[in-house]
Length: 214
Image 1 (cartoon, rainbow, N blue to C red):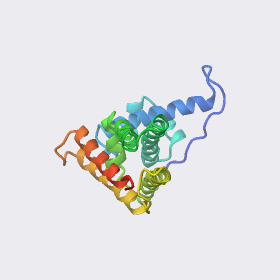
Image 2: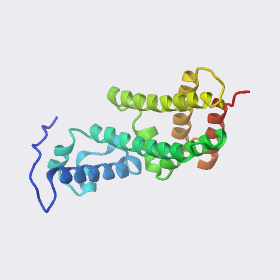
Image 3: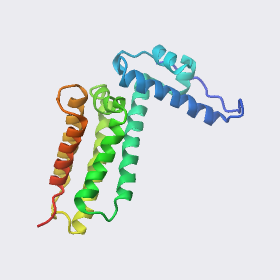
């Protein structure tokens, strides 16, 4: 493994070092989104190819990352952050609305964040799978965050009398597994359906999971 060069700390062209490094890091991530998500994929992309796509040098790469796997890890977290931000915004914007309307809007916001760029789906559900134990752990940790979000929302729905009072832990995990599996298979071309049809079906599953109390 190549040692990381020491990062510069002074100002250049009116920008602080931290700002320059952030911009370079994002250029690498933008290039990776294209190469990993729409090009040859993570497993066949080289550092040299990524640097060429980003318009930066290999020295600059090693100032920001140690390996290509570090790039994939950062990109996967970024894609999840975009989706999570969309969900949080949808939750805030639908507060107080009826049960079915609220959760329909929330999940559609999640799906729209991913589907707005097909490369995001490939990063989230295809490229990261089976890369290494480290990446498998990161994927499971992120999945656990989504499971916990559903459990939290279920508990709030129970409190409002909108959902049955029961343990949603297993159901939430099963739903997230369904989301990951179905979107993965759809992105791979194994499911003959439009994205709207996929989202409609997953929304029905979500609403069935958080079924209103009798």
